[in-house]
Picture 1 (cartoon, rainbow, N blue to C red):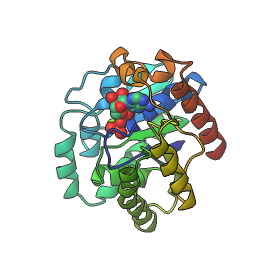
Picture 2 (cartoon, rainbow, N blue to C red; picture 1 turned 45 degrees about the vertical axis):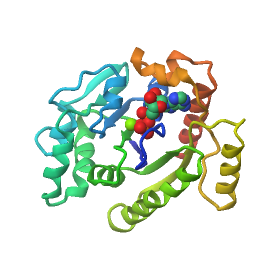
Picture 3 (cartoon, rainbow, N blue to C red; picture 1 turned 90 degrees about the vertical axis):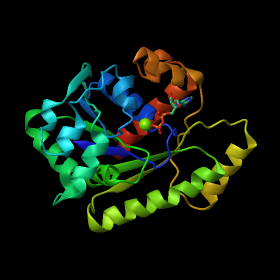
Picture 4 (cartoon, protein in one colour; picture 1 turned 180 degrees about the vertical axis):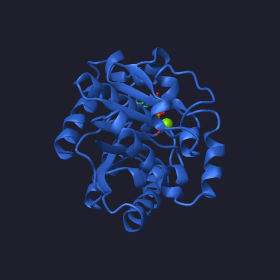
Length: 251
Ligand SMILES: Nc1ncnc2c1ncn2[C@@H]1O[C@H](COP(=O)(O)OP(=O)(O)O)[C@@H](O)[C@H]1O
Ligand SMILES: [Mg+2]
């Protein structure tokens, strides 16, 4: 199983939208996919049409329930481990536990026997907390969606530092898939200049840019991914290209 974490300590950069789009596309290509919502704000859970209750990832992270016991089938082949109302408290409980950085990794391992999946996509909270550290410890790949803005790049450094630390201390297998430019508008000079600057600076940019469309913001209302609500949009096209690239790279 390929485990891919989508992380950034900034909110509103498209993490959840990216997980939902990739999960949906992969399942439609016949892969079995598990999406894990680690954000107490539960955007992915809501976008999938799953009611946030008291059962979900908080119990898994506190060691009270097996991952297999909290899964929902969203569409055929696409499963969601939802966030729930106690995920913020769960983080506080986890801090006091031995092996606290490995809780999610162990939970995913335990699942493999009962529900083998081809991909696991982890949606992180907008913070560099213990939940995100767990997502980095459990993953083989990490991708960072970022808006192509000056301040966006400044926010990258702490994230890159955390990834580096995770590689050193917790998960030597972790690889950076790359930085995914999101909300990209090719007509904005600032966006194109910032991307060019990042390239010059040698940042590991992915070769795909995700544009901006109101259709992406509307999609969660219909409990569908942008790739289903607006399949011919440029954004959906970008996610399909991103997926093809990931499938090639993650061989
Ligand atoms: N490509 C896009 N174009 C327009 N709106 C988008 C796009 N991607 C995401 N959005 C919207 O922007 C908001 C933040 O996106 P989201 O994926 O939730 O980011 P994050 O998980 O990083 O906080 C949501 O309302 C979402 O629907
Ligand atoms: Mg989110």
